[in-house]
Length: 96
Image 1 (spheres, rainbow, N blue to C red):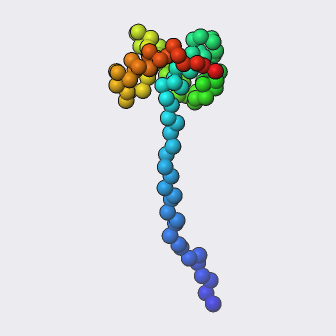
Image 2 (tube, one colour; image 1 turned 90 degrees about the vertical axis):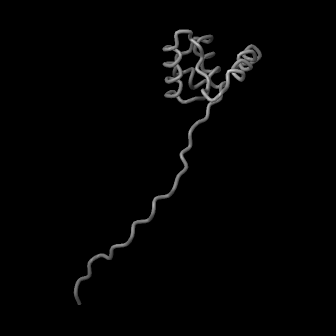
Image 3 (cartoon, rainbow, N blue to C red; image 1 turned 120 degrees about the horizontal axis):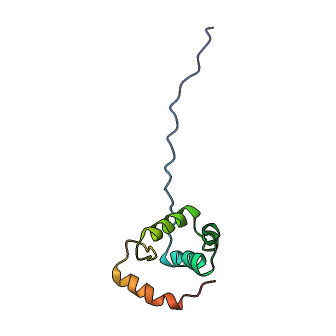
């Protein structure tokens, strides 16, 4: 009998995976800047305390430093009215 080569088969299709992103709220941003500016934590420690990714916190800090008015970078999808409501409620937010 002749030696038979390996039979070629179709490769299995790749599994479709939904990309999952962390969705941070404005409260998460406020917590990060609170820990960094009020508690004087290092950026890495402030990110851990606020339970956010250090790379994300680094982007927020870069945006904050590039802004001449030094405003906390909120989500861009919010309207000005929603940001005004958030700003007025910042005083009542209790950071743990």
